Image (tube, rainbow, N blue to C red; front, side, top):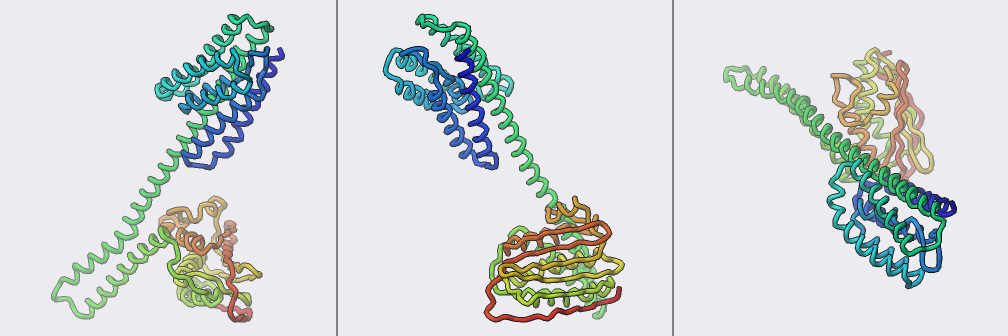
Length: 430
């Protein structure tokens, strides 16, 4: 069984090579990368079959070349290329009777498989596997008949067993692998398309809900203001409400624009501590209404490069969510920590907290932890802005104990060092 063992070892090398090729293209979505990798696999596989060939005599060499040749020809339409490679490799063993026999056989066979390949690929997965294995059995029989006709002295059982078992087995294994890969690619592409459609649907629903409400109110007040008998004071009141509703719609649109195009159009050096202090001042009324206490502890250094408006928008959204998570009051702690390379902004609340699943979904399009009271736009914008500023976000949270957001940004080299003393600011009542 020497030839059978030789073929099985050769087949194991082909399977190992296929495994590494699949690892190389697993994360790629490029059809061109798949094509190039496939061509390289089948050419290298033919070379391996040649290196580990089994010489019966001076004129006849046996190997598993039929396995990569048939698979590459049927599934990839590479029969002309692979046929040329096979004939060239066989020529290295010498220009003899075996070479001319191979030239005629693979020349005709390459042309036949090349013509069949388009029809073959239109079959079902099971039909393609069965057809590949059946073709391999037929070709193996033709090779065995040729050996018998040439009356080459061989161990008959070993040669027949090797050719009738190992090549069909190899073709079946590789064909099944290819079919599974193709099926997984189709499923992945379908999921990507479904996700894209789902995002579009959610966006349409969110736009319809978030913008229609203020616009409907605005239209109603415009209709009321068409009354000529309306008093001046009432008209001014309606105008104020109308302006507020339009500003609400404008904020929603701005959030969408920030998420869809988070690139920073203009960059400037920002003093993190000063900007965070400005955010605290802006959110003072909301914190006071919710009986939330602010505490701040700023490090000595805090210059980063970014866009002031986006930075403020990002941390207003985060702190606003934190305040709203403490409807019965609590403490919102804002702290910065600096190293020679980075500054970390730590925002911690004592609110309701989130589950691990909720934390893992933060920043997903239109995902919100507020139920019907939110759209998820705020956190989408936060994550988009942080990515645009080349920062990172890390969130820890436990139900009932609150949440901790850690933002990390790269520091700029400050032109002048500014010192900040540790401070504590108390806003509102517990």
